[in-house]
Length: 176
Image (cartoon, rainbow, N blue to C red; front, side):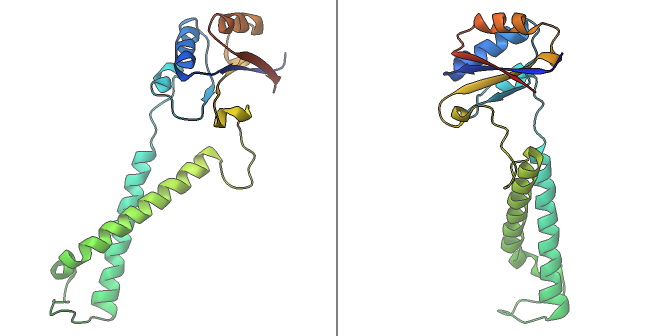
């Protein structure tokens, strides 16, 4: 038996959310949901774990702060100390108030760029990779629920009959 993917296509996010609740209550595992915008409340329904991208943003931000402080210490104190506006240039502690804006900006820059690159690598949405969007209208006005037959104990026909109990527009079955 080959693995089949069942795509349930909806035209409303609330209908898809209620359908997902109905299917999960009946014991159907939903692999993924594709939509043109985030559907609030769908993550706990289909069993998605909370994202850890905020942790990576904090780590990238701290790396940026460390690089900024090290760079300013090296350039302004160690390598080429200059007397700018009568401010002392002997230690980083004496100059820290004037380093704060640059440190903050570099931390934000590293956090934003690192988080963006991590997101693109994690989702494989880099240039040159084929998109994993099963239905082109999910970028416009349709919502798609993806269910794999090998993830569920129910047969393909049972899954399709449970989907038909909801207000589905179309059911599409594809072989993997």
